[in-house]
Image (cartoon, rainbow, N blue to C red):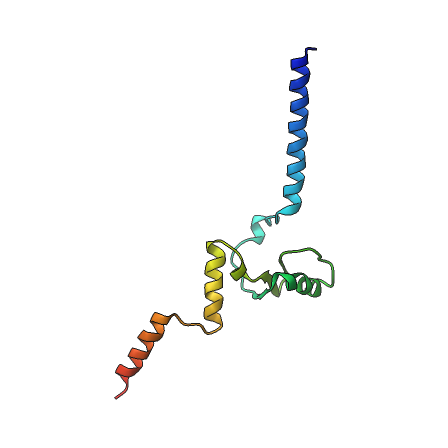
Length: 122
């Protein structure tokens, strides 16, 4: 066997081990997608919490079975970290809607609403 062939085999083994390593990391680090029959629309209570408090709340709803989690859910409630602290369009949209749920109204809508109230009054 030539030195070039040994080098090729060595690099091939290193590449294969690297692939195995990253496959294991990815399977542990990323949330697993549920089977298709468990996906789709659902009506459930969602509780947003600070990322520090998510683990405590998840421990409460699972009787301490879950640790080191980013989010969790059972059949009644879904515990998620506050999206207002995350980047990305989806987080931005959810953060925006949380503001509305807490009573926030767009400034331009407040002005429109005030004008409508003035017009309707005699």
